Amino acid sequence: MTGSIFRGGVAAFLSVALFPIGSPASAADKETPVRDVPIGGMIAATINGTPVTLRVDPGAPGLVLMTTAAADRLGLKGGVMELGYSVGGQGAMQATTVRPMTLGATRVKRRIGFPSRKKVAIDARWIGRAYATVGDGSMGPGSLPESVVRIALHASRAGERTVALPMVDGGGVFGRLSGEFAQIIIGGQPVRIRFDPYHPRTTVTANAASLIAEAQRGTLTGSAEPVEIAFGIARPVRTMTLATPLAVGPLLLSTLGVRTSDVGSAAAIPEADAAPPDPDEIVVTAKGKRDPKRDRLTLGADLLDRCSAIVFDKPAKQISLTCA
Image (cartoon, rainbow, N blue to C red; front, side, top):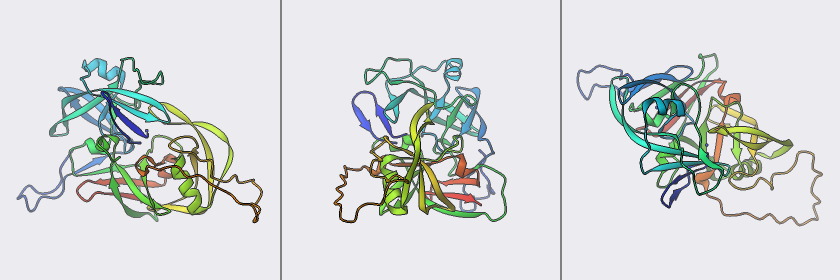
C-alpha cells in the first residue's frame, strides 16, 4: 500500500492490534501491558456491544477494517470522512465511523473502516474493497490498547535470533492510519518494512528496489507475474536476485519480487542475462525525486515462515523480529 486520501481535498501518502500482565500492587510495580496474539491472529472483540472476530494483522493499516458482511450485520454507516488506500494506482475506498469497542477487558473507541458503496469521482479504479475476508475484519497492532503487542507466527525453533528495529508510521498528516512499520537504511536511504505473513511473496516498490539493486548488486530475471499486494489488488512483479544478501533484522534476503511500476520505476535495474557494459560507453541514468515515505519492502510468508514472533513495542518505538 502506498497512499491514503481523505475525501475533501486533503491528501497524504501512506504506502497496501488483552490482558495486562503483572502485579496490581502499585503503579511503580506494574509491568507493561502486553497483548499476546495467537498463531493465526484471531481475537474476540465487540463493536457496539456485538461480538466480532478480528484478525490482528501486522501489515494492516491503522484502523479496524471490517468486511462488507460484518459491516452490514453491525449496521455501520459511514460518516463524512472516507479514506482511500492506493495500491499501484488502484484504490480501496473505505467509509469510516468511530464506534465503541471492547478488546478483552478494555473499552475503547476506534475508527472503523469498511468498503465504501459510493461512486468515487477520482477514477473508476477507486472503489470500495475489503482489506481481507477472514473473520469479521482485520486490525493492525496499533489499534490494540496494550503498550506491547506480541504476535505469534509459528512455534519457536532452535537457532532463533531476536533483532529490534526502529518503528515508524507512514509519515505525513495521516501517517498513523497507514499502520506500523520497521525501518532500515539501504544505500544511505530509509526504507519502511511492512510485515505481511498472510501473503506468500516478499515484494518491494520500484524506487526501493532500485536502491537495493545498487547496494546489493541486484539483477532482474523472468517476466512479470501478477501478485496480490493488499485489498485484493494484484500488481505486476518480477524477481530480483541479490549478489549480496540484504539483512532485515535476523533475516537475509537473497531474492524478492519487484513491483516494477509502483512508486517509481525499476528500469535502471540490470537484467541478469544482459551483456556486460562497454567500458568506453557513457551511460546516463535519470533519477527522479524520491519520497522515502512511500517506499515499501513487504516481507511475505516466504520469509516470515522462518519467524516465531513479531513484537511491537509502542513506548520504545521498536519492532522485534525473532527468526531462525
